[in-house]
View 1 (cartoon, helix red, strand yellow):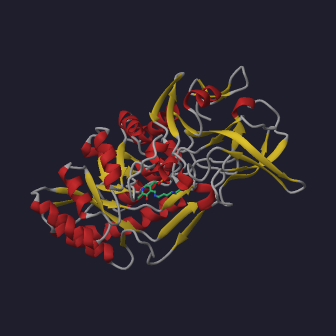
View 2 (cartoon, helix red, strand yellow):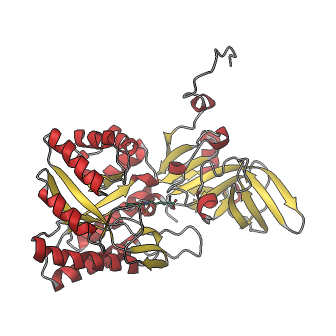
Length: 437
Ligand code: LLP
């Protein structure tokens, strides 16, 4: 997918760069991002709204992968930005992200984080709960600032892949519940607070979603309330944000829709309710993370040891694992991979790919059909661009990998590999250390 191909030497190439060469130049494990594919995805989301003549913001959910270079790319492509912490906001500020395009999320923003976001004049706060609703307003008043807010509501729809769950009153740590009247109360309060400009509503129903049903149901539920608010409170939102969650294809069995299909379904559902009830067409905001960067990322590992248990299984170990990709261990997430230096060879073997961490659960892929491998081969694991690096850890004091962006035959190092020195840089000795390198 994307700009991937197999070159004349039978090596996997991404963005015009030979991944085997990248492994030599930058070391392994290495996360390689196909910049063209990220651009294409951003453009499909944005252009679909444009074609439909619908005012929109497409915000990149930077929790999927945040770095200065990534945010510069997101900005270059005209995306807005969803940040969920002081750290993500700091990265955005350092990347010189236009502050008016930053949306600040989170169910427990600290006072320091709220002040930081206020001082930087972020475009909007997605307010999650009554505590925040009150405190943020106090802070805004002290600073004599008028703040744009969205109220995060829980529509009682939880979606994941093909499943969506309808619950009456949603049992979730996020947002104001619609069913119980909490959202009505929050809206009345927010509208009564003079330093708030209540732009509208936000909801997020889940992640890695393959169907449009969940989005439609959530929009339906929200509009039932919007109708009511129009008559009872004379309030109509100017923004409806339906969150992220659009699925990607990790393996053959995943069958996601195209960005255009998700967006068109969302637009259609919103327009239907607007027209039926004679409402003002709101701007539609979305906040994809995974679908912008997930399949643009490929992790390049070097193969080391292996172990065969006759008649049972063959384990092949790589030089990374759960420290750079926790998703298989945490969610039983499935991935596909090939041997990058033998990309044309027949897949005659069946092996399970193990990480190098001291934990039995550190397995990246079970029972992968693969070509015969030997130590020193390069393994390319696909679709690791979302929630891989961003959830990486230093477990076993493994340094975090380097990240490169590839495009048009050029590779650019955007995050350098951690060094052993980095690993101890926060340590204070208990007594004077005399050991020199
Ligand atoms: N907006 C909100 C409010 C969210 O909570 C999330 C993700 C997104 C947008 C972006 O969702 P996406 O388009 O990436 O699905 N660590 C998990 C995923 C956690 C998602 C949390 N929220 C994983 O690795 O699968």
